[in-house]
Every structure is written in structure tokens, then in C-alpha cells.
Image (tube, rainbow, N blue to C red; front, side, top):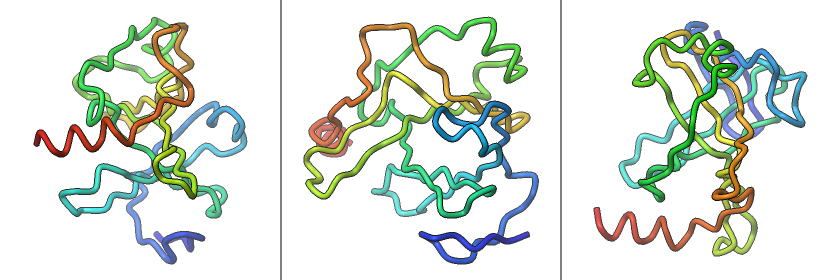
Length: 150
């Protein structure tokens, strides 16, 4: 199958790769089907969560453990049921990144991670009940440190 996206042009994809968000993503509740688009360059930690239902919509995402290795949170029973989680090793964790014109002001939403069960391709954006993480967590310096230590 293929879609014609605003940011990436025509993309070929396998229907088995579609990630289904039953409730959509907060603010985009009418969008349920997404693809993860990767840039295979070794130095590129970012991916894109591309909506299939509205191909103008794509979110920049990153695994938060790239820049914050100790990023953890509790997975509650509701999330376990919603994503049919049997093994946490099958989970992919991403956070949405905002990259403004002034790149040094780049932030990640650590308060609301996107969790994907890679075994069944079900996803959900969880809202953490946790004051430790910010909605607009600055990440540029942490990314620089992560890559200088790699």
C-alpha cells in the first residue's frame, strides 16, 4: 500500500506495520492509524509518527532513553489491558518532540509518552501522573551529551 504525505511524499508501507491508536492521540482523537518512519542514518535519533488517516499530520518522536537513560514510569493496569501487554520487552516508548525555529529551544513531552506494543501494533499516548517529568523538557544539551559520550 502507499500514502502520499505532506513531509515525505509517497511512502510504500506494509499494512502489518500500521500502529493502531484506539483512542487516537490527545488533540487528534479522530486519527487512529499511524506508521513509524525512520531515518536509517546512525546519528539520527528522531523518527516520525506519520498519520495515515490525515497524511498532513506527522509527529517528530524520539525514544526518551536516548537522552535520558533513567526515564522510567509505572505501567498501570488500564494500559496493560488497552495494549494487551504480555511482555514489557515488546514495548516501544517514544515522546513527541517540538523543534522550533530556534533549535536550542527543542523540547520533548516526557509527561505523555507514546507506548506501542510491538507484538500487536497497538499504541496509546499515556498521560503520566508524575510531577518528575515536564511537558516541555529541553533536550538539546542532553542529546549533545548523549552523542558525545557514545
